[in-house]
Length: 296
Image (cartoon, rainbow, N blue to C red; front, side, top):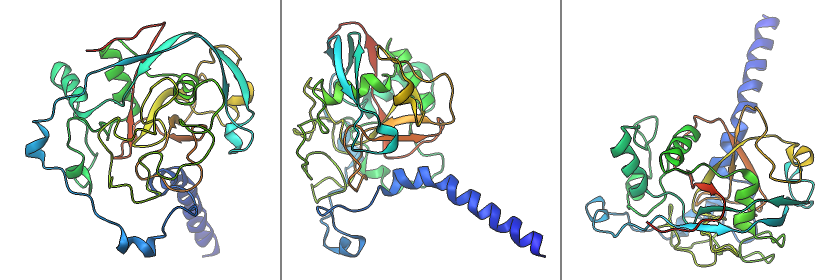
C-alpha cells in the first residue's frame, strides 16, 4: 500500500512540473502595481466581438519586410531571468524581418495554395476564436512546424532568436521597444484596460514599435522563432551570428501577448514550448537573410 501511494505522489509531481511551461504562457507571472487582480475582473470593460461577416470587407494589410542593418547589438540582460544572462554584445549580419505578425488573411492564402492544415485549435473548444477572425489580426493556433512551413512557402524563414531580439530591441540595449522606462499600456497586454480583450489588428498600438519600425514585439501575440531552447545558451553562443542550438526539447517563443501579465515582459524575456503546441496566444513572423525591403 505504501509503495502504491508513493507511485501516485511521484506521478502527480511529474504532471505538476510538466504543466509549468504551459501555465506560464497561459497565466503569465505575478501581478505588477499596474494590474488588477482576478477579484477586480468585474470592473473590466468588455470589447466588442468581431463580426465574422464584416471581417471579409477589411482591406488586407500588405506583406512588408523591414531591413535590419549588419552590426552589433546588446543581447540579454543581467537584471532579468537566469536564461537572459549574461548581457553580451553580439554581431549580426544584415537581414530583414516582417514588419507585422503574419495575419489570418496571409496564412489563409498559404492554406489555399498548398492544402496545409488551417489554423485552429486541436479541439473544438476555443473561447476567444470568434473574436479573432479579422483578416488583419495575427494568425494564432499555429505550431512551430506550421510557422516554419509558411515561411518556407513565402521564400523566407523563421528569424533566429538573436535576430528577433535585435529587430525588436534595436542596438542600444533598451528593455522595451520604446526605451527603458516601463509603460503599462505600451503594448497589447493584459496588464491594464486597453480596449483589447484579445489580439489587436497588427500595428494597432503605436508605442509597440521598435527603433527599426517593427511592430508588436512586446505584445499582441507571442511569436515562434527558429531556435531550440537552451537555458544556458546565452553563455555558450558564439558572438557572431549565433545559430540555434543543435537540438532540444522546446522551441523558443519571444515577446509578450494580449494575455501576458506580470513584470517579466521586457523584450529580453524568453519562453519555451514543444514544437507542436498550438494556442490562441501564439503567432509568428518571418525573416530573410541579407538587406531587403519590399511590399506586396
